[in-house]
Length: 158
Image 1 (tube, rainbow, N blue to C red):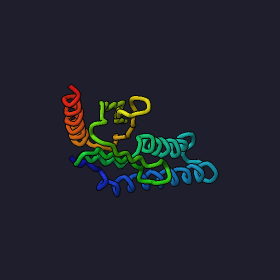
Image 2 (image 1 turned 180 degrees about the vertical axis):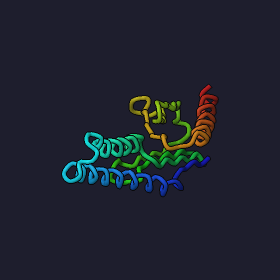
Image 3 (image 1 turned 90 degrees about the vertical axis):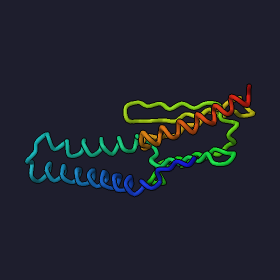
Image 4 (image 1 turned 135 degrees about the horizontal axis):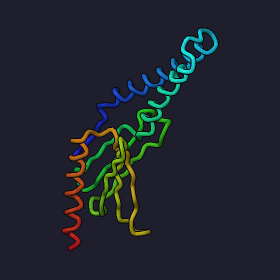
């Protein structure tokens, strides 16, 4: 099964550009109000606070693009940001039989995928992916696919 939200990259790029522009214009509006017009008073701080808060929420939500591929004998996970220099892109590929378990944690508007993979050195390795920008249907499809792999691995063990 293949799952990707790469086609939404232009939407995320537009949103990030819009938020950056709102922040810049908010700062310019604040400075113009503070040193020239003085029309808003203390409310002029909202010109900076609101856009910066929205931009911080967008960036703290995690990497926007998530790709998953379970076709064949390996599992592929890719997680990257639309702005390449912000975070290092994650790319992991491993055989299906190494997948032990997975967990999806959702706190407010942030979703994370934790995958436990068996390894030779220390028994298990935890891989972390940010899936906040996946829709509910995409998350459910991901769960179904990972459940199949985990179930098949448990049957082979027994």
